[in-house]
Length: 621
Image (cartoon, rainbow, N blue to C red; front, side):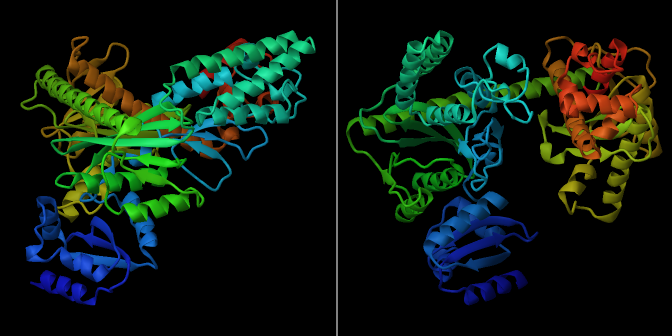
């Protein structure tokens, strides 16, 4: 009754102005975010018995315990605020892009004198760089960069570019760098090449080819045949790519063609990117929280969220049907495009209509393929857990598996990792890292013991203080694993057994050690190990869990090591004192470059012999 009275009081005080509303459940978590021209009318409509809400909205209303609102000056401001809030809080009742924070972009560092080209997941629109994306596959982005680098050999090293270096690196010899460091390419020539690269990514290849052809003829006329041959090869590489790009229309207009397919609560959106009449690429995006919502509402949310993060806005957006809030979305897209008009239309006939239909067919095929893949993956996960149950003699398949690993450099910056797999799937929100505090020097056994003691002390504390976890951190430690894997052999396992005995958990948690050489599984107090059948799903799962724990540990260690500083890292290498550390840094300039150097290159430094060079490589790996 108190909750009902509280909501009634809120509903009576709502302003009749534009803004956003945030609906929260009894735990104070935001479960839905919306916008309205009139907050009072819109929010009250959720609680009208005659409103005819769908199941999703009825479930939402049942969970609402509190409502907050933010008043803004216009409907456009409300739309922008709504999108930012949804991205930040990702409420479960909102339609939202799946894993949208993880989409990668190609970043051209145009603000630098000699721009590099990198991959990033952060879109910072005011840093002077140029961005292209978002893309859905990191692998596809790196494939694109491999292609770009062969056509436009851009810089990848960290050296300061003066044009006075005596020798270029290996990449110059294999034509993967234009070597501005040695003056082979001037600043203007290099920036022109990067400008061409950006035009290439925009799908505008004709101007590039025409200019390169003129440069090739000029170089040939001046008897600079090697330069002319290099430009010729560049033109041929561009034309090979262009041949694969399907010419869609003679109209030189930039368009995005968007369509959607839905099945059993899943929604897949397909986008075709058409630039200057050619299809230069396509991407698909999965949506969450779409159940019971109309197609028009789902597509409206997608358009808003996608173009919030899109690096470029085209002149035209083609859709399969009219969407909600079309007029205000058009206004917003116009502002994002710098005041230039964006057409958002539903073609009824002709080539544009065929494009939308083709996008719809691709969306349906993509969704069908993904659903088949999910079903196959679910079967593999079920089989892998069954394999572990049988191999480890468990009563039930292990629902929660935890794996621990230790990473350090000769005892410096020691960290431990905890990864969690739930029902055979990595549960990354439950991953945790530990900075090892009580251990001096390279002692993996003691480090593992400290990490496990801290983990189960947190479990003990969570159990004693509250029946329900209060935070995400508590959730990581509140539940016991069905299977605990320590990355290592009998030494690490014995320390894990001691910890579990001290906490009285030996009869509740199965603990095993995983040796790296043959993927041997060791049990407490047993001399014989267990080998899972090669190529079995259980074997692959154990491998994946171990590799994930190692990746998480070493990533954390490197970050910590970098914070400590390059001098401390080099000091930790046996045989490296102040004089040799200074010599190495003078020769290579940074620890990263020392790490990348070969043993032969390291031995060119004064005082570094082959044995010491091999030690350096091993310590900095």
